Amino acid sequence: MEGFRPVAEVVEEIDAAPFLVLLDERWGIPGEAFADQLIFRPNRKWLAIVGRRARIPVDAEWLSIGIPFLYDQMRDPRLTTAASIQFGPLAKRNLVDLDRGELDAFLARRRFRLRPEEAAKCTGPGYIIARHRGFVTGLGRARAEDGGLLVEGMVPRSWPARGVGGPCFR
Image 1 (cartoon, one colour):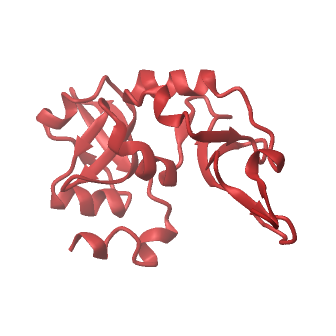
Image 2 (cartoon, one colour):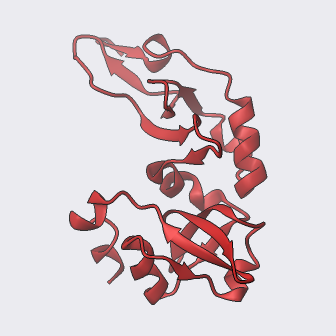
């Protein structure tokens, strides 16, 4: 395509193998799911991801490419909300189904106790992917307390205020 160049000419791909192992170990998301994706580091705090076939206009100034993917400079690396929504449907563990009351608490970032049947889907405390009615709603943090798991949603604070997440589930 004239006037466009491959995204691989614009960003520098990193060796994503250690991060793909992390995704497989925690959520059961297979590394093969990222074969058509290019993972790169736009800054020191997180990784971003974009489709390998993406092309960037030659003459346009761009502010960002792809979506924020993984915060890797933390004690426990975690997916971004956007990445959990995009790749969460591929998860096989630490994926919980929320009822309506739990969803409301999750979106409001209030803590709630995970029902025992949902807690059984988790390998233990840590980051979980939450869904409601089959749709991934984002990432949460599960903490062990009183023999169960307490969950707090990690949906960006500005999303519910703008109507992202809430109204689409009414």
